Amino acid sequence: MDRIEEQIAHLQRMVEDLSEVVARQQTEITRLSRRVGLLMEREAEREAEGGTIPLADQRPPHW
Image 1 (tube, rainbow, N blue to C red):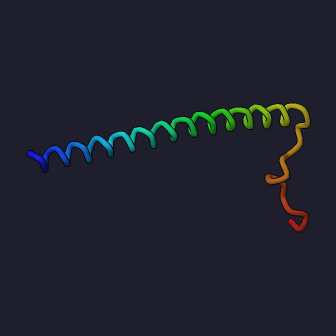
Image 2: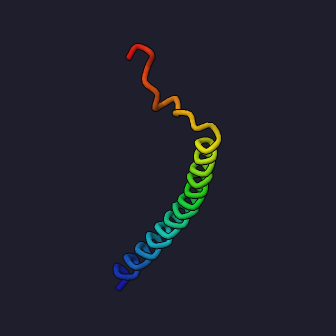
Image 3: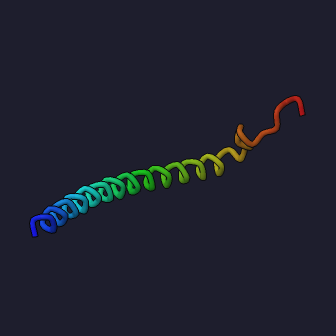
């Protein structure tokens, strides 16, 4: 009986730890999703204003 109680206590602690990890990950995912959304909006505005080809998409001068 003691062995089963120890295993249950161990499993409960593990579930609590995993729950904390999931909660932290959800917070981070939410934060990163907001940042990606802002970056997408900013890039759309930049494309609408200038209409230039982004530097990363331009061919190098030697082509």
